[in-house]
Length: 300
Image (tube, rainbow, N blue to C red; front, side, top):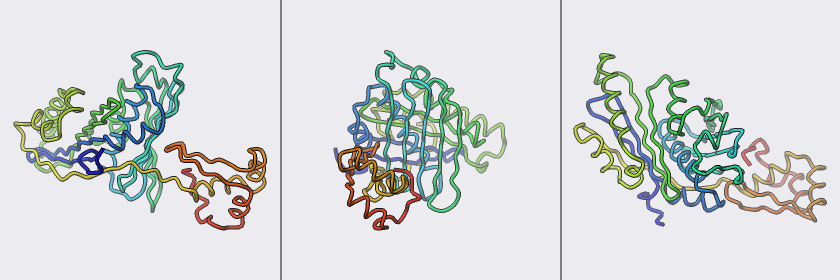
């Protein structure tokens, strides 16, 4: 697949006659990269794609420098889905699952019963923020819509679909009153725009380009479409970060691990399967202070 942004991007749009903005996302290459790291069953691949689409849309709505982390946890066959997307629009993801427990034609409730969705914003400067909501919707789209109802008080709707090859999503969000001052007018406009969006099928969103999607839904509206914003898969793991993780164990425990594992420690990145090896000499060097600049970074 090409590195050009026409495979992985978000694209913003606004309605000239309504206080509503929107965003569309398309992911192919980065989605394929995530799925290539693990042999995910089809329902898991679909959920991962939808969560990647949601993260990509959310990064466009949040004004920050840093990392957006989405975690869905449950007591069921899929205990964890996790996506990280940076303000630089670099994305990675993973899932943990028990394949033997996944039923045929599984729904979100089957896969992630008693689940919770956590949205964490980890800025490079300033305070980390986290919001949590129950996974109580029939789909991830509903769960994210519910999250904004519960936590943001801003009218926001999500439509998310993925099929193992392409992940697509659309977001509509209300803006402060400007073009429509009367609350009744605002409510009617919002209801109309979201009702039209809900007529879009999964097949249409997955197969049509953005211009066609917007014409299909809003050919009677004045819609302005902005430039594409590219995204890409990137894993932020490194040998240095893996070494910092060993330092956090303490010298004695790290040395013991070297002995127990036949002379070297293997540190695997859960996101990309990259493996980093450390022998006794490496461990000694780590604890002598070489290459250990950020021991507080615990993402790996």
